Every structure is written in structure tokens, then in C-alpha cells.
Length: 109
View 1: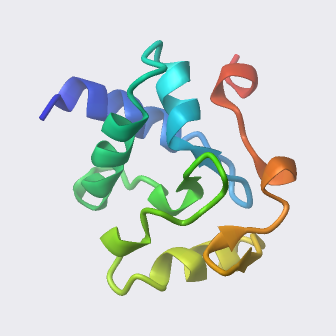
View 2: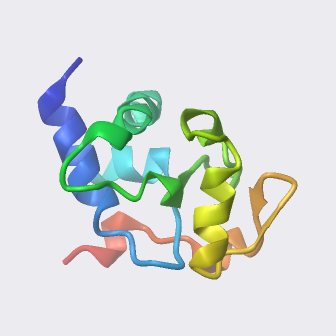
């Protein structure tokens, strides 16, 4: 486990505004590791133990699917947290994904 990489992932994820989402790949690209989206996903699976907290529910796959939901207890919690922030989900997919997408490469100054 590369804790330094994980911490970098968590730092980016903590910047995602409420009501917005990003993807594993977008976080990987923002860290200069474009081919490491699976590693970002792996880091997010451990986000529940990170301090300060990481809003892992705001990180989805490149199509807007809630592929990480099985790392939440219960799995429906990911969708519930997004709904509380005004993010609509239908069939485990973020509605208006492109509109709600937060790209760390362009948003972080």
C-alpha cells in the first residue's frame, strides 16, 4: 500500500465541492499518474479510515456509475450521501454526470 499516493488521492478528494462528483481517472490524471485510476479506486476503498474524513461518495467511475458503493456500509449509503447533496442517481448512475463533473485539473489552481 502506497500511503503517500493514497494521501495525495485523499487531498484531491477532499477538495470536491458538495453536489459535485469526479472520477477515479480524473484524480489519477491530476496526480500525474493517468494510468492509475484503479490505484485511486483502491485508495478510495480505504478512505473510510482516513482522517480528516474523505468524501469518497463523490468519486465515481468515468461514466458516472457508483462502482465504489460496495465499500460503503450499507452499499446504499453512497447514493444516500449524494442525494443529501442534491446529486440525483438513477440505476446506480449519476444523473447529469457531465454537468456535475468536477475536474481537478481545471478546478484546482
